[in-house]
Structure formats: C-alpha cells, structure tokens
Length: 500
Ligand SMILES: Cc1ncc(COP(=O)(O)O)c(C=O)c1O
Image 1: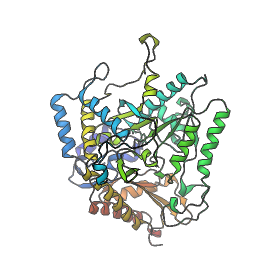
Image 2 (image 1 turned 135 degrees about the horizontal axis):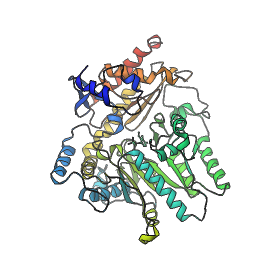
Image 3 (image 1 turned 45 degrees about the horizontal axis):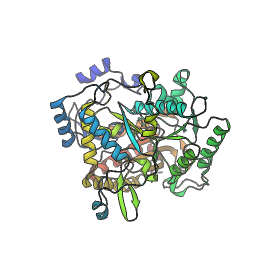
Image 4 (image 1 turned 120 degrees about the vertical axis):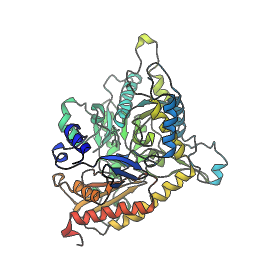
C-alpha cells in the first residue's frame, strides 16, 4: 500500500463513510487534476464524473481561477470580516446581487440582447440585495434558517415559534439546523434528540409517485406521468392546515428543479411555480437551496421578454421564481475553495437594524467569513460563466449528456434515467417493469460505482442512484466514456439480467 494511503488509514476519518469498509481496501489517493481528469499517486487517471461531489464547475486547474487565486495571494489570503471589509468580498457581493437578480446578462443568447446589456429580467418584486458569507452549504442553510426564524418572530404579530415546511427526503446539510430542515430518516434516527421539529410535504417524484397511474416506460417518468397534480394539492393542504392552527408556515424550503441528495429527484415542469405561488399566498418566505443547482448546473434558464433572452445561473429562475433567501455554496468558487453565501432582501436586513443596546444584531458568523482567496476564485468563476464560450459549452454538454444517457434504457436494472441540465441520476432497480428497489444493505449503487472506478470513472451514489455531474469542460469523448463505464458497470454488477 502506498505510504500516503497508509497514513490515511492510520489517521483520517472520512465523511459519510463506513470506516470498516474503507479500511478494507487501499484508497485512491488523488494528487493532481486537469480539466475533467483526476490523477492519483500511482499515476492512474480517472474522470471526475461527479465534479468532486458537485463542486467543480469549469474543471480542475482552470488557468483563470488559478491566476485569480495567485493574484490574490500576492495581496493577502485572509482577513477577518469581523470588523473589516475586504476587496474581493465586496466585489463578489456586488456581483452575486447582480447575478441573482438577473441584472447582469450572462452570455447573452441573442443578438438583440447583446445590444441591450442592461436589459433586466422580470422575476418579481423580490430583489436580493444583501449577501451573508459563510463556508459551506450547511451553514448557508443555517444562516437562511436563523434569519427567517428571527425575521418572522420580529415581524409577525404571532407569538408562536415560526414553523418551516420542506420536502420529503430533503437534504439541506448536516449541521443541526440543516438536519432539522431536512427529512433524511437516517439522520433523524441518529440525532433526533437534538433536532427541532419541521414539517414535510411529499416531493414531486414522478417515478415513484403513488398518484402516478402510468405504467413504467423506458422514458423519464415526468414525460409520461398520469396524474392530476396531487402533489401540488398536498402542498396547498399543508399550508391551509397550518394556517388553521393559527401559526402559518414562516418559510417554505426547497431545492428548485431537482432534489440532489434525496436521490436526484427532478420536478415536473410547472411544479415549482405552482407550489411557490401557494406558499406566497400563505405569506411564507421562500428559501431556495441552490447549493447543488446554482451556477448553471440545471442548464440554461432562458428568461424571456418578447424576443430577448438572457441566461440566468439559478434553477429557481427557470420557473421565474425569485426566493427571499438564495443559498449557494459548492460551485460558488468554481469548486476551488470552501465558501458559501446566503442572499436575502433589504426587508429581511432591515429587521435586524437597531440601536446597539437593542441587540437586534444577527448573532452569527465564522472565522473565515468572506475569505479573500475564496472570493477571488468566485469572481473568476463568475467571469468564466458569463462568457459566451461557457454558455455554449454548457448547452452542448447538456445535449451530449441527454444523447449518451439514452444508451442506458435497454438495461433491465436501470429503472429511471433522469436529467436536469448538467445533472443526471440513474436509478438502479431489481427489475424496471416492477420498479422494485434494491435494499440499501445490498449496496447496489456502491458496487456499481466501484465497477466504474475500475474503468477509470469516479462518482458516488445516492443510495441506488448513480450520479453523473460532469465538469462543464468535459468533452463529448470524455462524456461518452463516463456513460459507457456506467453501462458496463451495471451489466457487470447484475450479470444475470444484463441482457434480459
Ligand atoms: C442541496 C444541498 N444543500 C446543502 C448541502 C450541504 O452542503 P455542504 O456539504 O457544503 O455543507 C448539500 C450537500 O450536498 C446539498 O446538496
């Protein structure tokens, strides 16, 4: 075993990992990367098929991000946001506000819009104006949660504690507030005693929806579903029931377009718009968790006004939803450095203003809040995203991904292939006709990912769902290899059914 692997085995405790399994085999020790490729200590190369757990946007060692970090290093790496402002964080906050309100056209898609760089996307009255920096997705959600809680307490006549509604199976992070907001059974069993109660409503999972009367087909279940939008009806019911209790939900928390760690669950077109309209009618704040979906991951959102189109970077905007809180992390720095942000409105901000002795201050923050290196990387990443080249690259990759994924349908152990933009989830089942799932203990997803790794493709499953989320720089040939490794790995893992 390589010396570094030995050291890892001796001392490193890995996240979300059964360490007994980990210690049974020699780990892949990554020492380098270039574009969509990772290189290990033995000189082997692997495709980074999940963008290093959904973080990397433009590929590894991107010259522009490298240069931005190097430039910043020549000035300073970090100074505290407690008591001081800094250059890149100020610039980044301004840029994030512009992007989040679609005031900054991202790679204009038509000649008309190119002539009108100041054209503004009409996304409602909810202007995101303030940025609270933090370090990871979980804390971005904690910040939104704490702000929404305190804002509601201060601005509603109601003395009852503010209540939150989120989606079944939701994962919003692993800190206590974020776990409480989420509905992952494993966590609630483990930490139940420490959590506070939030409510949940069925997520619109067409493939496994009890209201979908359509038989399984070899196509995305959203396309052939037969239902009467019962999932939207359930949201309405939840809001009405809570209102009757005299304490309407303070906030509705959601991942727009696709729930990630819940199992790559895509929402049928129109769901987000309908349920957020309901939430608004009931006076709830909207908290959009765009930790996974942000920065172009869910594809080109073309906001239209007449003939003009502008691309936006956020999934919520695909359905013209502008939240009160926008939580971003993972891809914010292009996947380079740990940095997150929670954007919110002037109205929320104002509720925390007061005389010092009133103690209306938002008591929250971390040592590395507004880190200068992270902010410099994020500015460079946003610069890249704004180029026409990047927009074109992403649109093409989305199409290639769609085309390549079609080759998976003939496999009987693949029940569903779902894609939203540049994210794909491939659900393994015992038999596609029955949709019967593998028990988690069978480790179906893990075994398929191990077989993919043997073929030089690295990703990590969410239960029985294999995730493909390539960096935006992935070439068609690289993408083809990722998908064929997945196809071969499924056939190898379930040989009896490989041709059945
Ligand atoms: C939607 C979503 N929210 C929050 C988080 C938590 O982010 P982090 O792991 O950076 O704390 C994740 C992580 O996967 C996520 O996918």
